Length: 498
Image 1 (spheres, rainbow, N blue to C red):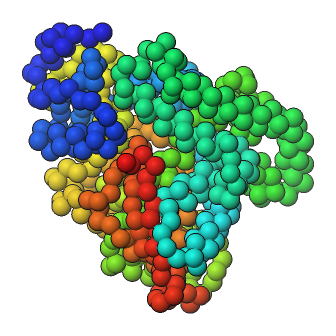
Image 2: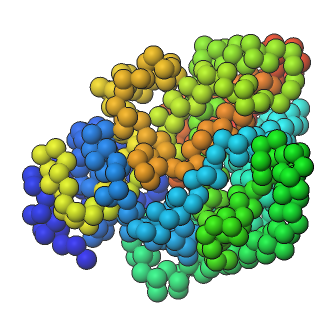
Image 3: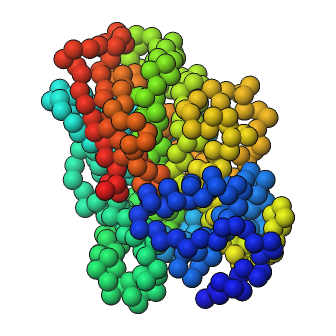
């Protein structure tokens, strides 16, 4: 346990303020920390019960913490994910992390992302059809959940090669994924639940164990099935390669590999991974790849829907690429959607899907005039970092043009880090951006959006997720906006907002 006086004496000079916070909800914590960041530029200290957390929100300080290999260990808070994720890429440290990072980096090669685009398109079609069906009925419905289930549908098939139809069928696994995220958040913000013995005896702890069994049983079953089938899959890949049928090597469309298949293939040929090692990485990919992407897409939809001029540019750009053609977007098409990409990036600036990155100082650190002692938990508060008016003038405004090349090339590289930065940045960030761009491309080809609430009425939840109400109009076959009977209201509500 860290003594307040000892910690205060070890930091010179004292970062002000030193505030005790009680994170009753994620939304209240979000408001409190952003308020403190406005009042105290660059750095301050939070006390969560008896734990000091040094909070930074300055690009130069972020670079010290994130750049290089010195401070790659995550903060102790990540231990609450160990029962579910083990010590996979997200939670591991030291040599294990370095080894896993080297091994997994090739699995996000451009050719593999190219193959995943087929899944992105397929699941986006399901989403669009669901929205059309709901539009015909009129009234309000929960868009947040539709987007979240689409993201989960995508990650299940790309991670495990498993078609679970999350968007159209009730699934025990899907419910368990969402509930586990909520239970983990509950534990992290209630200090009396930090000791394992107390948490395990509590109601949330017992429910956690039940959901954990569902998740691990499902992943274990999928891995076992893929291991049984992998010899035949591998033989077919080799046959295609030898016959010249495979256009892009072992990742040809004729044999599409899920993330799990690539882990098994690497284990079989390069580095031996145990069954548990494989499960750690598959579960990590699942955890990191659905909630954050869903939050990013929902905020982008809301912000575009609240800005008619911006939305007109999005529609104009999409129309210029596709015209009357109803084909699925290709990688080449998506590269042309530069303004849509700017909208996604600006949404992630205002509402980053991961609002905090936490590291442990591996040695004493000098941050400007402050000396930070070894073993301190350092939190990078990305919503505050992204609102630095010196870097982003009028920081609360939604201005996608900020991310045009001519406007961003001279920006400090650590002033915008929605996917973290440095050697421990998000390994799946290209996957996430491609997924968001694909889904939003499909949505805005078919719909015109009008947000029914102001941003001030929305409440960021866990993972930066919005609660929102959005009004939409279906775009007609000629991609001209329609009015009248096609108007309808969608009211997405963040599950964590109360």
